[in-house]
Image 1 (cartoon, rainbow, N blue to C red):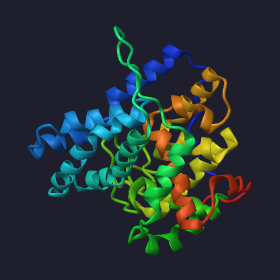
Image 2: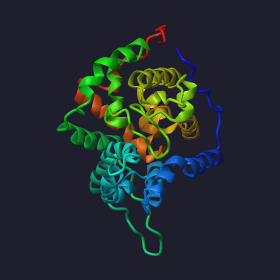
Image 3: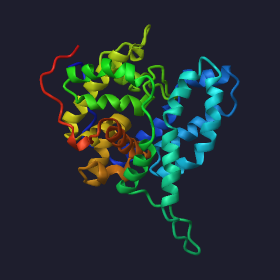
Length: 304
């Protein structure tokens, strides 16, 4: 196996968690992306994407629903410029989150307001509500057109790393199987690897960004997933760590004294709360399986 990211500190206090959140918000928009918005004369872009990332990182899934209209308005704007088109790919792959948030908002009862007190936050959706909504969203959706061409190439890459080939479909969730996808935070490729993670997994990001190579991106993602499963002993938790960061997940599990994704989900970022059930729904639709049925990574598989 390639080099895995170094493990984070074993214990993080609440103040450490808050600092991690503040640090993310300070770093969540890549400088290159901000420069592109400025060069393309797209006023309001930085404010929208900061708000989107902040909502993704909050605990309240339903708050994302308010950004659905704005996100759809930004898509053709980003598509119109060659330089910003990869960000449109990323945003289009995440419209599902905003749609799911709207459906969950409708399903949840409004918070009860007591006279003289500030309104309480809206209740968080349950795992069953999430499962139902994501099942509905994925039910009638055909696979991305590029999946048929890429899957025969990528499934053997996952298998070579001892990771279930079904998890190749993570590329649909991350990038709609478009290797050019780029996030405002700097993640790139089919499996949306951040620069530090990619480098830790043996990929170069300059002068040629190997995250854009489907096979290399898949190999790195599979190695990282195998490492995360080895650490958390569960595919749902491994995927939560893939999305939210392993240090953040470990700290939340410890601070709330819980051991399962369902128990820790309410404390995770809104994106992660939806990310794992979206992956689950995608596997059910595409492979007629579930995360619980996937075997643990095989031991001793060679790295490419």
